[in-house]
Length: 363
Image 1 (tube, rainbow, N blue to C red):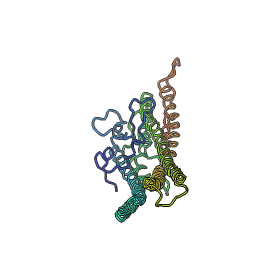
Image 2 (cartoon, rainbow, N blue to C red; image 1 turned 90 degrees about the horizontal axis):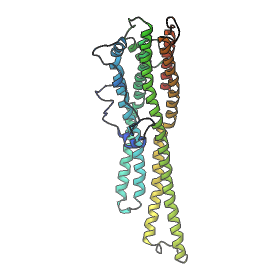
Image 3 (cartoon, rainbow, N blue to C red; image 1 turned 135 degrees about the vertical axis):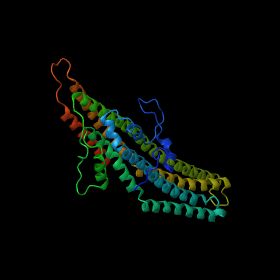
Image 4 (cartoon, rainbow, N blue to C red; image 1 turned 90 degrees about the vertical axis):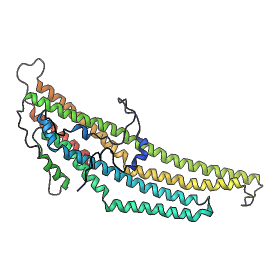
């Protein structure tokens, strides 16, 4: 089992991947705060954690909020570790290429460059073995699956439908775990009056709007990550190409000035130094571009940005349906008589919201 540490979701011990957090900094339209992180920690403040229970929905939250918060924090910690791991591998391998190229400028120190290059490659391989031995990625997926499963189950538990998530014989153990936890609150012992339906629709709509905010920001941040990494990669290649072109032009100019003599002895020392520099740039530039491209490929930021955009659009429809349910439960203006029964519609919307969360989780 995983170990949940207090505040592990907010202050994990190992978060090297934040070295490129500046790539995600942007001002989101409609938000005055200019700096945003790649992931937003939202669980702790949105779950009831004991104390006085003001309504039965707070009682539902208190029944399994500790499990939801712990799973979210554990998934966040494992996400930091996993991303830090593949960043270390990319950084160490890129460093090895830089060291191998730099030895051209300092031939006397070549043994030391070779030694540090081997250390860098060994460190990259050690991180790779450690990530597989400790199953960072599979553990991250399991913890995140449990944490996100609670989101849809929570709203279903508010209306007495907890545990109705379909699980087949081939379902992962995380689905069974979430279902078992969802049974903890039991069936709400309340009268499902029109006023209660209005309150439930409002609570569900609030949780949906929180997810809308998350996916809106997440889509913008992931898009920014993808495009900035792409631009940096091409700029690294462009710098290497410009330096190589400049070295070629200088060689041709020197050959023309030297009456066709292109021997090593006739070449100025500064030109030889610049030529070695162009060789290093021609090696390091593409290596950096490959490293940045590997981060972009491994993170798959563009695909997940599109996934967040799609989920955002689906949740907008859910929020609109919940608003209409609240209006109908309160009664149509100018219509005499009791409000129309809308509990069935509320159930349909809650199930639809859970389906959206499940679809987002599968990608």
